[in-house]
Length: 116
Length: 112
Image (cartoon, rainbow over all chains, first blue to last red; front, top):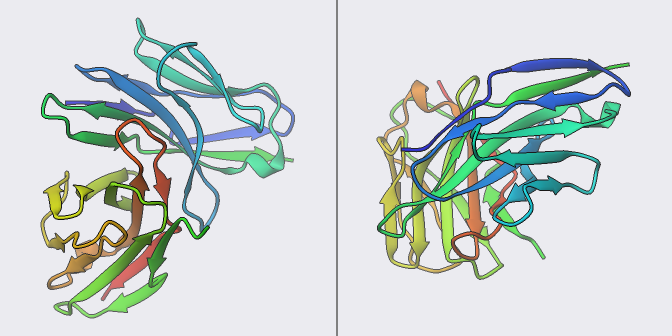
């Protein structure tokens, strides 16, 4: 069975400082990896995803994540954060069983708070 | 393009009452699912459907029923509400396996 671990439940960061949100996964089958962002009182929005190919994926707002198969990690990074990045971030792994059923498993989330 | 639409956005129920959370998507997606979000527990899969007429259980299906009579709609029914079902519920859909999953804006449910 697959699982996702987000070790940091809360991460406070000063504005314009770099940030890394950690995500580790376990799965016995091929995986697709995702980061979703949830702004206050809103639904989840896809931030970026890894399906195949280049292990470094980027979003349009400056976030990037690197798939590391040997370390089973998919950490999210941004070199310089803004107030508007304050949100909760969820890592997710999407796996497909031998029967063809897919499942999306989420981590418990990391609340990123930007300090002015 | 409405995407994934959930109703109602807010609901208060008394213990033992039943209700249905509605979910509709206009993207012709085959795959639809329901999650609940609780503090410190992330999102947990309740039920999912891979197409009209096909549904299956997720991680936390007890107390919930679903049906998928059309491609567009995937309602979630609470049979007899309990305080433990107080949560935020998200409906999601995707075109097929491997495609991006789109989420609705959530339904905040309180059971008193």
